[in-house]
Image (cartoon, rainbow, N blue to C red; front, top):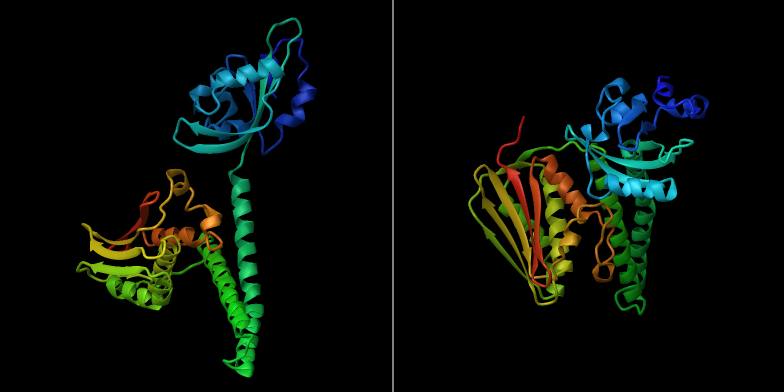
Length: 360
């Protein structure tokens, strides 16, 4: 330990902070009131990309980070002087080398006897490892739930089929059986989405690339969903420019189109229209799904690709909020992009780009 020499004799820090500085997962800084580093541990140097603690001694923390407008140093100092601590809060730290870290952090004021001001103790922990661990647990949970639900769902559907045959088409209970079947299928789709998303997020999907005719695939998906569009009197249109076959995993691209058309159907009022368009860019193919639906506000668009985000649930059919995260994961795995343009009350356009040639 070297930090004792940086402080006046009136502060006995050796025993008080010996254990603290040896904590392997916490970044510990000792700062003066000008936010210059008096000492720090190795975890702190790693956090700010300084290499070693010695490289930070005597330098301002702003030699290593950009001030964050959400939590500027003036606010920190006011909190410290008024209350002796900032309390625990989340802080997005931007390093000078361009890296970004999300921290759980706290600052405490250490008074010096006989002096108006003291020194600052800054504790911070990078939340990225915890976030990754949390995501891994969520993925495993989703996989287990989706996998284990297959057997009971299959039993329910088989039993419904047998009941339907036994009771016949004239049974007064037929409506109830059809409702059970409808909701069972809905649960089955949500479980399958959970399984697909978990596998995509964990990198467990091996795509089988082959040339795909986008116009043919779009037409296939539309024909399979025609009953849904007719139930809401939606007009479905297609326009296709000449395109060479696109190297894709056709089964997963079909999932993408199904999700986009389901969303368009759900959020377009009765009597509206949905259009699917394919076109060619310079070295990429474009797929657009356009609707005359309710649209969405800019703040909602920023969250659309977050897993489980469902926006205004009062206007949702109750999915599990994994459709668009699945779409983006599949398209980006094929080196493509997803863009969303939407105006509240006017409709939404989702545009996909896919390279006409995939890297080997």
